[in-house]
Image 1 (cartoon, rainbow, N blue to C red):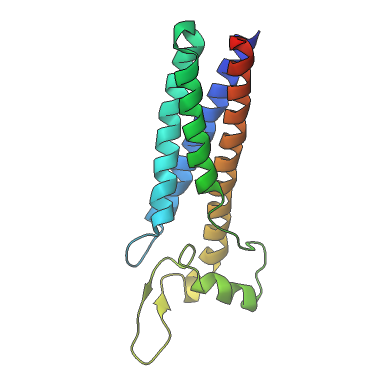
Image 2: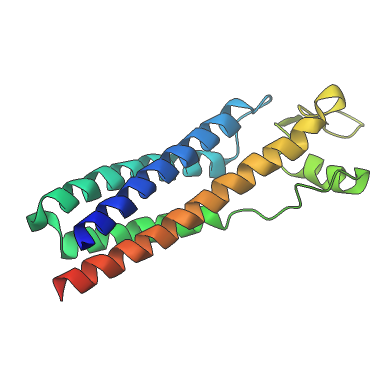
Length: 167
């Protein structure tokens, strides 16, 4: 029974990791001016390494000799990596008031990149007719973080199943 639970947890880990990688790439591609924030690259790395962990963990579900301390160590590392990525940002994405949009506009995670204009405010990519992208990029980034936290929870469950199976 625990083999099916273990394999199911790994399958969801892989699916969630694909979502994280996809959202991260979308955020990176949506950067209009300049380079993207480093946290987007980190989130893409987290998605990719977690996919690899899901594949290796799936192999461990099939071949019992791979389960054990190495799998738990890999999962522990992936938990830390996903937790670090999952707590990166905090913003109110649903609020479409001008005051909140001004906060989102100044946030490099959502503004799409800015040019420094002399004697004026910075000119950012998501301005004018692209202002609605502030909230959508905010929601994408929030979903990215949420899925990383869900992966960390799944990995905690996987470590618990591995530990109880080895006892």
